[in-house]
Image (cartoon, rainbow, N blue to C red; front, side, top):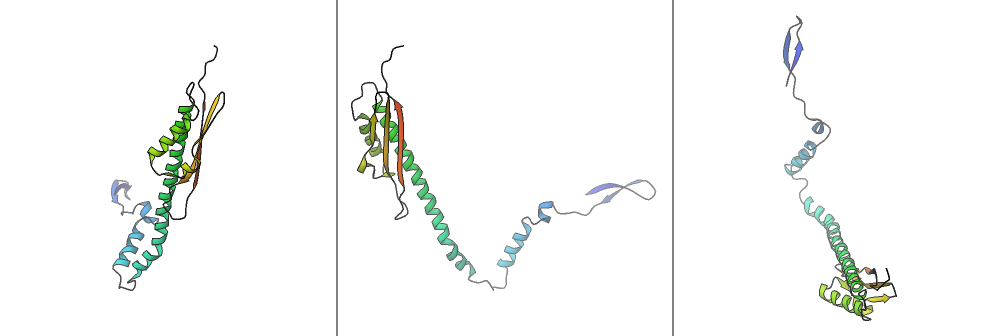
Length: 168
């Protein structure tokens, strides 16, 4: 890089400054890591067999994280399924002059159609309670188990107002 400097006699001159590496490279950056990997790969063979041992140590932790994340996703899908079934039950039960049990029947149909993300819901079944002004439906079950022996309880409730004639 060139920069202007003053010479001894006062005339402007240009001097070439030596190249300095970027700040990130000087303060650590990527170069030391790349150099360490190159040394290890081009080494004299003192670390032979270290990679399979490292993999055997790290692989169980990777598998636990993988299956744990899948189990967590199954839990969230089960919760969403239970909530949508409860909302479907509320929508059916809150209609003007709806017959008793319409909400529970609609929630059961919804749960049969969605698959097995929510397990054990049929043991207790969806429950809908109707008062003069409000409907509450609750769906209870367990999430689908990806990891053997692990199952999380799921309980979702939805509320709604009953349609009725009022005076204005």
